[in-house]
Image (cartoon, rainbow, N blue to C red):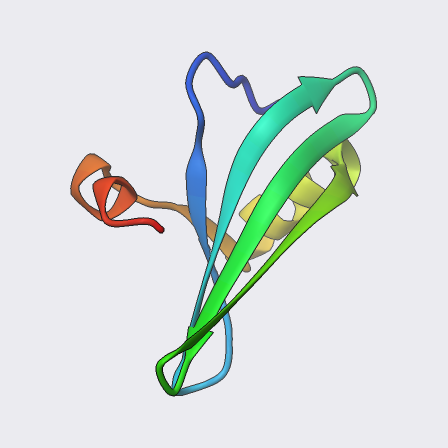
Length: 77
């Protein structure tokens, strides 16, 4: 189970040339409200979504999501 005492930021595995991050905004009993920011070719795209706990945990286990360190988190848009 993921605990969120602070806003956690994850790098999302994506295609070459694109950098995508996911920030947990709010936790509920069945999942997380998240902010996804993708950068490619100098353009940023941001969306707010809901993702289930099961899906987050599966993505962490498979390496699709990796928590970023404090330095990287400070540069997140």
